[in-house]
Length: 134
Image 1 (cartoon, rainbow, N blue to C red):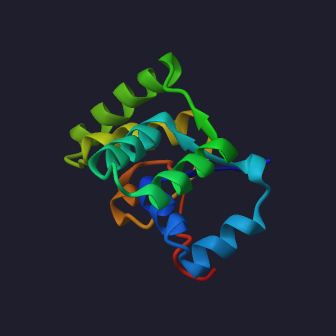
Image 2 (image 1 turned 90 degrees about the vertical axis):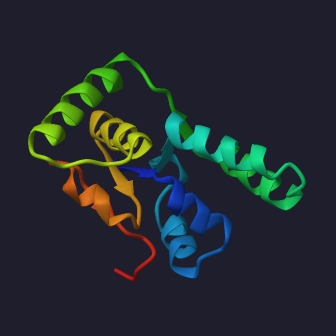
Image 3 (image 1 turned 180 degrees about the horizontal axis):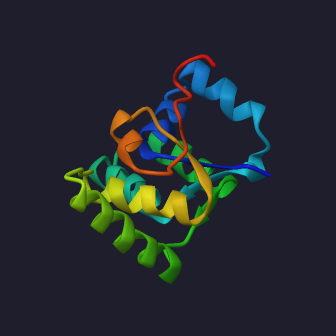
């Protein structure tokens, strides 16, 4: 089964009920959806900045109960080192958290679901943008 790793911006679109993202999420088995622990950390940071946003807290926690949160492990760590070194050698860069998420998607053989075009610079990373109709 193909695995889809939702990037932070895709999770945000899902929580805001983006019609195309919501439709795409319902078209794949729930077991095929996951997020990186890095994305989980970004979500927790967002919630910590808005402690009074009760609906947002509920939506994020519900999502986290339903999708697999993949742990950052030693294999992802090694992949990150190789990906970052390769990108720096080519004069390419991503933000630090995006680089971690990209390496995690590569290591887990996941399709990264994002509308951030910068991820297209990562060699061998399969990216899908679910904010657009297929």
